[in-house]
Image (tube, rainbow, N blue to C red; front, side):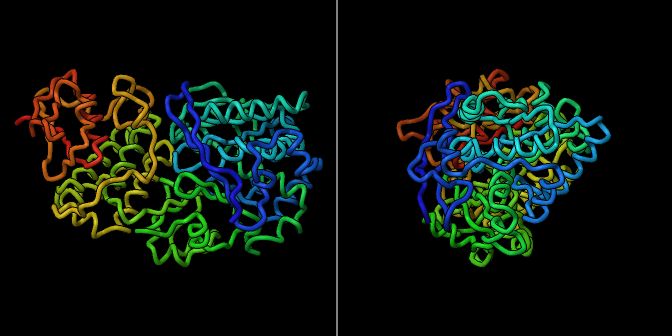
Length: 526
């Protein structure tokens, strides 16, 4: 493995958290990350020195290149890029020759950093691919949607380094939440709207940016297109799996971005990062699938191989779960974060996902078989009912965890537990940076649209309870609910039950969701 750049963090006061700037590494000679060994960032001169100038291709030549290389989208579903191009060309004919290009650089979950890495370290490669497509389509504009201020600055700097362009190109900072990258939400945000999913099946190839037929794909896809244009189809196909040639970017453990040829064993990538499969590996991010250790040991990085395990590469994340953390607690933590990342515009998200997370938390806190059954009922209640795929993806994540760790969930539900802490190895945002007074909702994230989960709107007459069998004396609750929870000399709460005033409900619910040991709950007085 070639180490290209170390992991660092930089402060972002405007966003209120410290984002990870990922370490870079490569299995074999890198393509997308080429030239970054020891370099902080490839500016325009360094980029041209390493890659040279891209060719100009006509629309038919670009479609042929995408077909001959077998290029697929690198953002989720893996849709064939040639079919996207053809669909936009057809839409362009119906729109008097007008079109647009959108780059989705909005990675909405903290376990995914590959697109941020490209836009921070090698932004000109992405711009090359986007402008290559824009010129072939005769696009009126290229718009790049991002959710990190440092990424926006890097892209704007790269645009400025290019000087005057025949096709206008802009980078726009959008609201940071999980669903921002959904196609209709992304174009809505770039159109200066609220950035909400439309709830309708609107093809961007028919109506996207400014109402025009739009080529919409993610950052890595455009970078791969720029590489393919320079190498040609034969050169592009000389690495990787023959049925799915080229390389792929993978975010490993939420910290390192690795470029590897397709067809490389997942275990090799993990081992080169100093990791093993642990208790299992989550593939595809928080809408993805858990692979048990045996499957992680044999899986290779192709669509066909992962499909045999019921998984897809999706957002390009691989999250191994180490032995020392509690799988059930980690799942609850992510489920609560996902509930808070809703766009806040449909019932399955606003009501269903918080209810699913609460039911899961109750099951893990010793709620018994009835609580586990309630989790499955909550999953069924949100499936195929959302304005976007977020409810389905969240339910799939929970269902996959239940299937991957059945003994863990059964043990917790029936009061045995596992005795391990929740280390937070599945990264979420908002816990350290957002106080209760600044959160429109609960759950340590942003609950967009001002909607409040059902647990925050219960009638008066409630108590905050401490489960002594779970409490580990972290003391976080005393900071989140000051004046109500007081710690004794031993660092544990002084009381097991405390009356909950209406003015403190939001803070108390935040404390329940953030408790590392899942030891807090709110109970109605009877």
